[in-house]
Length: 399
Image 1: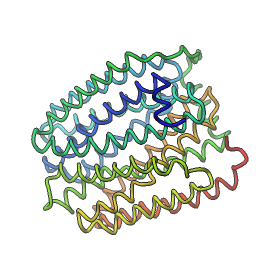
Image 2 (image 1 turned 135 degrees about the vertical axis):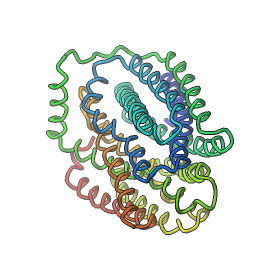
Image 3 (image 1 turned 90 degrees about the vertical axis):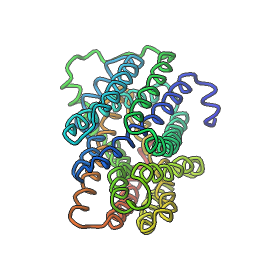
Image 4 (image 1 turned 60 degrees about the vertical axis):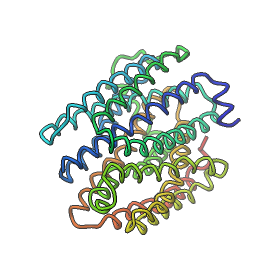
């Protein structure tokens, strides 16, 4: 079975994949719009770092609650309601027009990511229930490919769109696309799964945490997956646009082109690497990711030459994300899907948030962006050593 066969044979996968592309494509218009707005308003470095961090914070703070919400509600109803709330939060961004409204920007970013995280966790929990292990691996890879393709197209077009039509129109275009996604979601046909009857949120949250610490293999897999969260480069890319490449192009175009080139690599990587990735070869994927990021650091002195480094920095990312996520899903007991997936995102986003803040702090302390990027690459070399320890200790227990 391949990606095409899966799409042909499963209507729900076709719908979810279509929604994913449309919504993710639009998301880069509003995301590029937010960072372009911050640059145009001459926002301080701390505001850029906080904006990047807030994109991850909801998934960190609310993960325990999100997991219970996912397990206690019907998937289709939850998907539709979360998409609708996301539409409203993006529409409200048009009212942010000066630095005095930063508080509203921060609130809206936080709200949007709250509902987006619940949507994602609902979808991933649903897929784990309705697909076989082989299908699940393919869907996760497809998810990362669609994300990367929409990222490539979205970022490239968003920079050009904003350059000619402005930030506010970019927000409205995103709203329009989410509306299309909501229409597609109404066509889903989902089995009526048995949901949690227990009403006590606290006990369910506690039970979920205890399950992870009882089943150590899940805990290690969650951490190994979270290393991929370090590749959330929003703060780094924005600082490059504001300082390193400010004389090359407008901030919107720099942000758009950097992310578009990287995303091309994110899309191509899993298509080429899917047949090679397994528990024995994964250590080389971590090493490849680290070396790729270091190569990007070495080429950052020139905007156009850095595109080669960006391709290297993104080539292994999607495969790492898809394979480690599938490992978490395959080794989790079904009754804990919602909570474990929420906790997986919580740790993943914690890594991303910490890195976003550290990038701003290290830059304020005088460390140049090339050195900061190199440090991110070195972390993946450490992750490769961690995987080597993990596979030696737990290979017999892996599903």
